[in-house]
Amino acid sequence: MNTAASAFASAPLRVGFAGTPEFSRLALQSILDAGFTVPLVLTQPDRPSGRGLKLTPSAVKQLAITHNIPVAQPRSLRLDGKYPDEAGTAHTSLLAAELDVLVVAAYGLILPQWVLDLPRYGCLNIHASLLPRWRGAAPIQRAIESGDSHTGVTIMQMDIGLDTGDMLLVESLPILATDNAATLHDKLAEQGSRLIVEALRALPHNTMTRTVQPEQGVTYAAKLDKAEAALDLTQSAEILARRIRAFNPAPGATIVLPGINEPVKVWNAVSLDNTPHTTIGQVVQRTEQGVDIACAQGTLRLLELQRAGGKRQPAAVFIQGWPL
Image 1 (cartoon, rainbow, N blue to C red):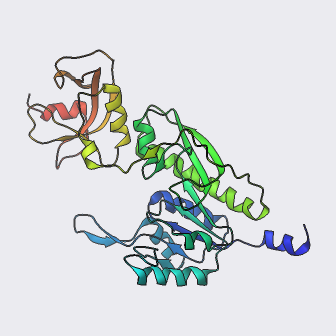
Image 2 (cartoon, helix red, strand yellow):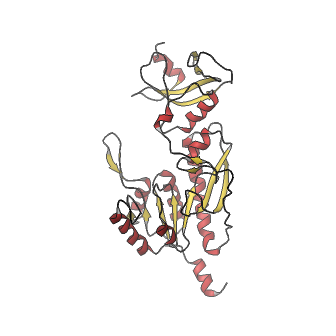
Image 3 (cartoon, rainbow, N blue to C red):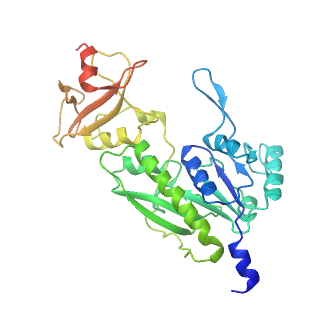
């Protein structure tokens, strides 16, 4: 390597960052801790939150503010779209930032081609699945719901498709029987924040192998719909137990129980067996260990529940206030 190339490779990268929730915040913190220069952050506009619906900045924006990093919050990046003025302002900010690379993690906006082409090294995405499995919006939840034994993080060179770019780094992670969306999220966020720093350090030296995603094994992780939260007891207990874990903490799975006039949230449950039942929805028994419900296939034991307006309670406490 000649002197000029060596100096270029050793110069600190100017890393833009686009992300919104806690998963993204951890990645940005790791990038900052690793000493990279972050001249600009993109994040979603402030959203109403809490009982008072007060406008609240994203987790990424809050971190950027503490580090005095300029923040852009366009509702769209399409220069010919619904908000061309906001996209144009973001375009000006991105040009001025003179980025070497843009890191994207759960940002929430589609990047048009002009954004992908702007940084010297393009755009890198931190995706919480083993691509090409679970492209899309909810890879963590869908992996649990589907009973996958493993998931992981893929650092991907972004292209115009939906999570279709070449893979740069891939690391697997087992999904435990006790994992829910919250615990798995935290593991993957830590993994992703570590891998993106590794990728950024390797980027100027061109030491990562770009691997085209295989055409086989593609699945799509559709965004969670609140309508999915209602447990359908005509499904197997095993499927429902996985869905409860996948929907914890949001949107939370619900069930209708005898003697209670509104849906009850179920935060934790296990499948006891695969025995077929003809009395679907019947309460088999209520004990301190849990509330056992007959499903079309198997028995579902509810371990932690919450009535509307109440607190989350273990089954032993919940049944004390449940007239049946």
